[in-house]
Image (cartoon, rainbow, N blue to C red; front, side, top):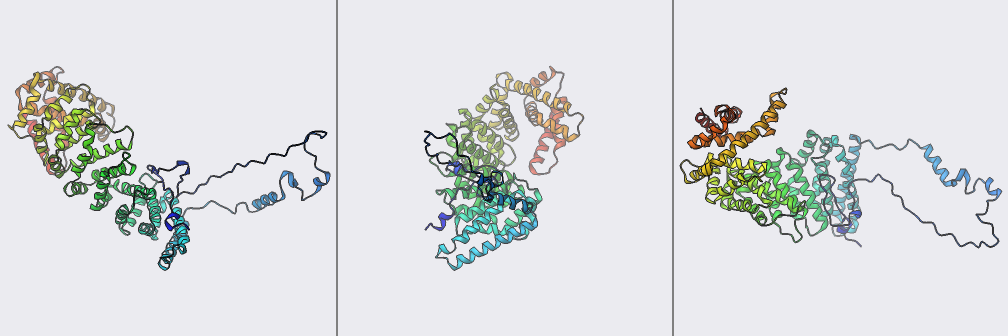
Length: 573
């Protein structure tokens, strides 16, 4: 007799977002939670007719007798169909209209919910009574599996989510994640992932009502965390269970209001551990998905970022995972390439926090990024973005800037800036690093003097390149403003921002610093601006004053930015 586990072993595939890549024959897979409305037709073959002796026999079949034509019970009664078929057609005609399409309303949901709850109770009762005799509750387990799958249709009717939560079925479904039969738990996890799919049809209020019932009233996150520890990925069904669990976390993490609740220490710890698992056949789908969920969580919540950086040593983990890509590129359009993107994104998110910057320095992240910039591989553009974010901000940013200079990073970043093959996105990150160096490096410090010297060397060629770059961005921003001249203020600002307003402002901050600190730079910039009848007042000063007007928050970083811009404006008078 088959074991209770074997009864429910079958491929589980998600309904949306992405597809779980089960290593089985795809033609044998099916979506377990949806009903197939198509017809299945079997092709049959008629047996070959026996050989006919043609000697002396007229060709063709024998004509039917006249008696058969008049016989009501004859095979061809009713114009070519059997009497049984005729009776069936008559029955259908008489009962036409008796079968109507199911209406998915509250009444339907309550019937479904009642059946679901009864099946859960019956299965629990039989399991408690015959715990050592699986054959006596296997049938109820099969019924429960079918009831779970029947809930899938609810994902197409999110208007019923609130009622589903109110009658307690949402809590009962979550409770099945702790079922003794792992396959029942996996089936429940799959349905939950379908219902919470943030790419679905649910409106925010409908989605929130369901999520609140699952999280606040039913401990969904604790059960998901326990399930991740419970599932054994050496088993195909359990592997799909991990995937559905990650899908649930993905949907919840995508909503900022729930991201902090999702990013608990047990869940983030599991995600980091899963991302570190070494796999023989490249990066698996679940490993990549773990990195993706980590990236989403870290982007959505500062609390999760601090937890990861300060308590879980996430920066060290990410740097270790990325170190191998300083010498090789991942395969294009593969799980590995997406994995690398996700880990770099996660590391970049941690650079927002001062604790993340300190860990980045302590684990030689600056040096690793500079190596990646020198190698010129796929990791190059990611490493540049990480450095840009690490140097920006307020607290601990100065230490990152000093470390970059001490690690001989000036030569690397200025060489990239002067390289005509450097892409526009990379140039924008380089501008951010220049602005951070001039803002954070202490005055008269060796690091600052070395930085200014790089701008001055070779007859101010970097300054000339900055002014030319400014002309390009200024023309694009002006064109965007003219294009939206009839729009409101928000539309015009959005158009200018999309055309490169932020980069134009960053260039002007860099040039303003150079003008303020070096007379040679000031003269060079004035001469170049005069070629187009421009002055420091009509260009740099105007841009900085616009930035000052746009600063509204009063946090520490904004206050420091306001003070810096105010001081630079005075130097431009």
